[in-house]
Amino acid sequence: MTDPRIIDARDLLCPLPVLRLRKALNGAAPGVEVILEATDPAALIDVPHFCAEQGHTLLATTEVDGATRYHVRRGA
Image 1 (spheres, rainbow, N blue to C red):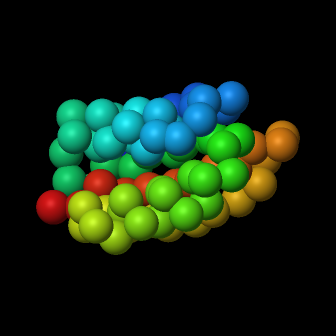
Image 2 (tube, one colour; image 1 turned 90 degrees about the vertical axis):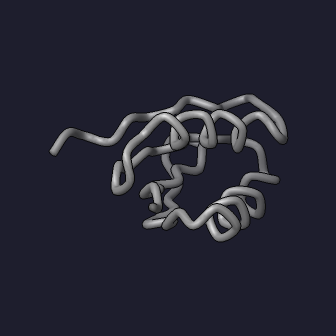
C-alpha cells in the first residue's frame, strides 16, 4: 500500500478545498486514502459534510502547523 496523497489547500477559501478533495477522490480507486490540508475555517464543516454525502470515510482530523489535516478514505 502506498502513502496517502497530500493535497495542499492551505490559504484557499471555500469551496476550493472541498473541490480539490473531490477531484482527488474521483480519480482514485475505492479504499484509497487522501489527506487534505486546509486553513479555511469553513472546511471544518464542509469536509465532514462532503464525506457523509458522497460515501467517503473521514478517518481523522488533526491540527498540523496552523492547518487542519483531514484524512479521508474513498468510498465505493
